[in-house]
Image 1 (tube, rainbow, N blue to C red):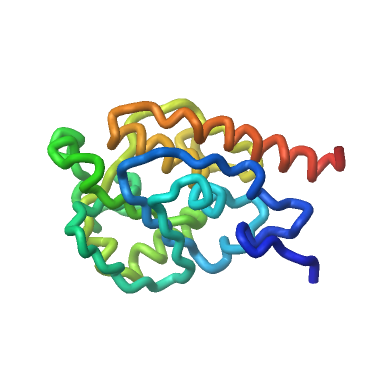
Image 2 (cartoon, rainbow, N blue to C red):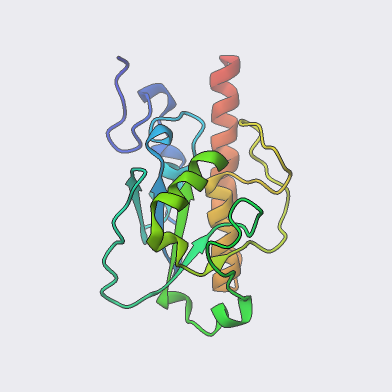
Length: 192
């Protein structure tokens, strides 16, 4: 077994810790990662967690609802698609904006579409959360994994756009991180 970085859990030659940049944000981020994604070389959730000091990453299919001692208003970042319809209501942006960004907790499921839907069904507390659907944004830069639709984003891209939407400002520091990650992946594939 190849030695792994203890912080990002990737093989040492593919460590992403040097790409991470601390990004100021007000919204608390909870990333719920499917176990099969934990050591996935193409995944961006761990990188997002390294960049966002107000974030927590939990691995598993079934998750206990984390304590919310500050009473933050929780939202689930999940599209209102045919696969997920009827599980929760989509939160209108006007209602979300009534909450100060520092009073929000964004829950994000990290996994393929099939895995994320399974996690949604296995965690009733997630189903009950109001859903945040992303407003139209730029097309995904994530060319490493095949997407079935143009609007499908990597976890890092989705979090960046959601934070921009909820905080009402651009979170520009995450985009160079994504570019660095893609360049690193290209170099690992081509051997350059």
